[in-house]
Structures are given as C-alpha cells and as structure tokens.
Length: 277
Image 1 (cartoon, rainbow, N blue to C red):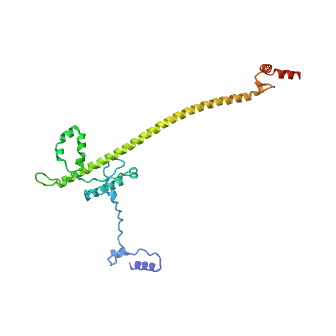
Image 2 (spheres, rainbow, N blue to C red):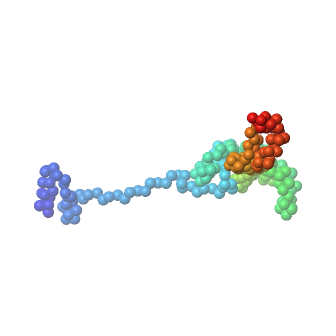
Image 3 (spheres, rainbow, N blue to C red):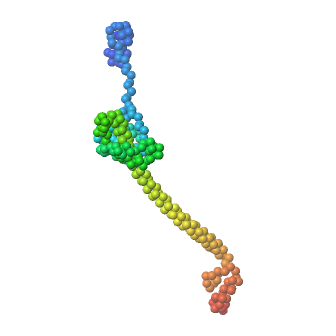
C-alpha cells in the first residue's frame, strides 16, 4: 500500500496525468483517509405548472374561451378562472389558438330575487312538458340575482355557505353558456353570410362557364370552317397546273371548252384582233 501511494505521488510530481489514488483501499482498511464522494443521481427537471394541470372539458372544438379577468365575485372565482384559462390555452389546438378570442367577464349580481314569481312555477310540470318558454322568461332573474343578503323569513338566518357556493357556480355556468350561445349565434350568422356569398360566386362562375362554353363552340366552328377553306385553297394551288388560263384576264378554267366559251362571250373583240395579227 505504501508503494502504491509513493507511485501516485511520483506521478503527480512528474507532471503527468495522475493515476487514481488508492482511497478505496485506504478507506476499506480504516486508515483515516476520506473516500471519494459518491456520485449523486441526476434529478429530473420538474415539469412546468401548465403541464401538471389537466385540460378542462371543452364544449366546443374551436374558439373556446374562459374568463381570465377577476370580477367582483371574489378572488377564488378569479383564481379558478385564471387556472382554467391557462389550461385551455395550453390544451387548445393550434387552429383555435391562432384566432382571436372574444372578451368575456362575469357580470355583478345586483338583482333581487322575485320569490313570488318563482313560487308560481311548477318545476315538475316544466320538466314534464319541457316548457322552455318558462325557463327563458326566468333565466335572467335566476342568473343575475344576488343571494348573499337573502334571509329566511322564519329564523332570519342567512343562506348556507355551501348551498350559496353551489348556486353561484350554477349562475356562472348559466352566464357562460349564455355568452357562448350569443357568440356561436354570431359565428353562425357570419358563416351563413359567407355561405351566401359563396353561392353567389358559384352562380356567377356557372354563368361565366356557360358563356365561355358558347364562345369555345363558336370558335371551334370557325376553326373548322377556316381549316376547310385553307385545305380547299391548297388543293386549288396544287392543281393549278391543270387549269386553262385565259390570256385576256385572270380567270382559269378546268378544260379547253370552258375557256373557249369564255373567250367567245367575254373577249370577242380581243380574240378577233389577236386572230388578225
């Protein structure tokens, strides 16, 4: 062991790469020398907070939005809304993230509850007859009524906190669905207008195609006529050697008889003078 330590010290003095010191053997023999520190395993990087939260259920594929601004309902609602908004932005598809998102913020609850009107509603009858009109008539008062100051007329006690939380969450849900309905209705009107314009463009394109088809047909007929004319002229040029040319004019005839008849009818004087010569 002493020889090994001497060899290691001599290698360090010579300036070469020192060998591995015999710390393991010294530590194993309890000679009082500390051993080399044990290598610590690499700690995996902590995932980002956005990846830890699961994507909330999204009722629509595109243009899904969640409230990010804090309202007068309290910090808990604002924090939950911000978390839902961050999760929706992290889990939204690229097509929905690229488009503009509509602004949305919860309205304050300032209306008082119309207990007399609510007492006149038969809930079982509404559910059995699917009376949507009654729901539509009372949806605004139910959604935007304020229940924090309501007290029991018998014991003058306030609303149970858990029940109040449930009602407020139901109000927020209804308000969000109302806003989503308005947004989707506006989107539907926009798409219907685009569809109408597309139909108009399609009709204009059909008319243009019909007009162009007529022009193409006319041009084809003209091309056929001109091709026939050119072929006839080429045949006439090729057969010009077999024609009998009149000596007094530019006319040509297919045989000698026609030429003589033409000369007798048109060039009698010229032919007589030519005969005397």
